[in-house]
Length: 197
Image 1 (cartoon, rainbow, N blue to C red):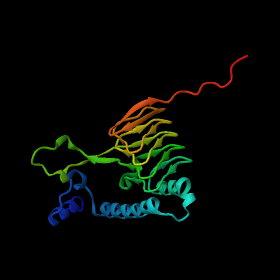
Image 2: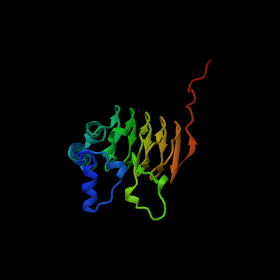
Image 3: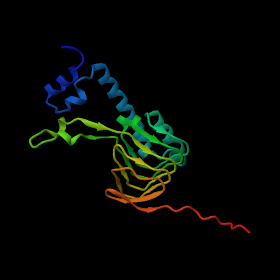
Image 4: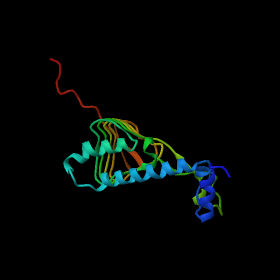
């Protein structure tokens, strides 16, 4: 038996149902590296979520740097609130541009089960994952408790209302709310305060 595929066979013998598509071709070394990386990222994420040490610096300085260490692409002057959860095993799929504001208790997900081949009698735990990027464009805001699903782009300057679930792209400079989030308003341009004489 080759090293590749051993992990899947070992886990199957233990009696744990996992996706063959996800784990069939993984080597012992890759599995070990994945476990170590996941463990380190989980520890870093827990610090980011709950730490009150150096509290004033956490929101705009410490958390964004730690998210970069975990593999996220994070721009400048990004605000990451308390208890924000991100998909730390797929952190390289998260792109956050400058000036983004992520309020407390948000969730960023980059993977979900692929239900396209799911039928009556199938075992859900054996389904493969679809992994897709998340883009938070410059200056957008995720209101408290927002959930962003895989493959979503939130446009520049957009505001997502608290408690929303974002399942599709949101255009720039709009306000979207709901479960699923829908655009309810286009943000207007500021009128010139000065008139020509």
